[in-house]
Image 1 (cartoon, rainbow, N blue to C red):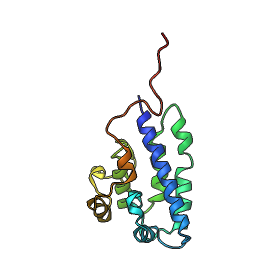
Image 2 (image 1 turned 180 degrees about the horizontal axis):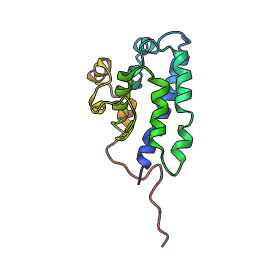
Image 3 (image 1 turned 45 degrees about the horizontal axis):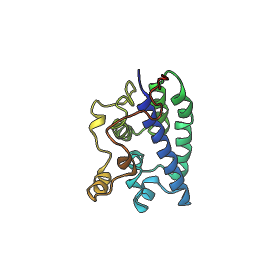
Image 4 (image 1 turned 30 degrees about the vertical axis):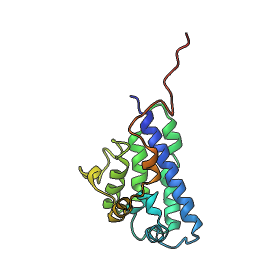
Length: 169
């Protein structure tokens, strides 16, 4: 199975998660809920996935949970056989425990790029890929501001990150 483009998308998402951590850390408000800061600092534009978090999750809690949810991703994404369930289940357990609506929204967000993300895990609704994250994302999109990911992603997938083998003739 050629899953190099899915791996690339998941690696980009990992980068987005780390970038969001950096932005939130720069606010210096460790005990403030992430959603409150995201609204105050207009982080929805680039980090739409933050909208799926539980409203009471603080920056400090988010930082710990992201570290626990994603620390194995680099190794998993480099393994020959991709363990799809493991990639999604750690995120579900760490970031969305007790927040099934948020989990379904998050999965819907990621399935725009990785169609199988979250398959086979408990708590999934069949229409998770159809749910918008929240109204705030629609407001940002209506303003005409495209997220950095939307600007970068084209419908065409060629070569990178693992180009087709070259022939030597």
